[in-house]
Image (cartoon, rainbow, N blue to C red; front, side):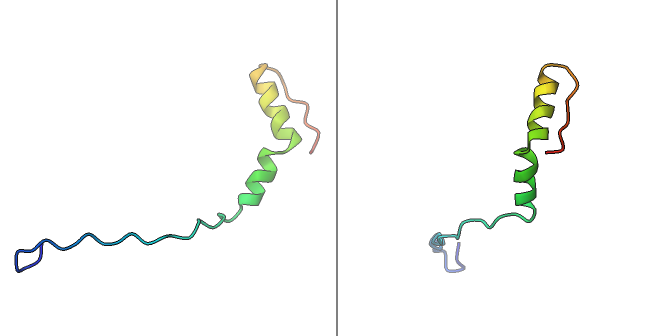
Length: 55
């Protein structure tokens, strides 16, 4: 409320630019998309040992 008793208008929303990629996002994408990651998930779900390929 303003000192004179009037209610101040709500601020207008501004369009915001889309968020930029976080630093290292490409590394995360590469790791999670790797064959070894998929093998690790498969082995975990099957309660077995992973056969790492280095890929």
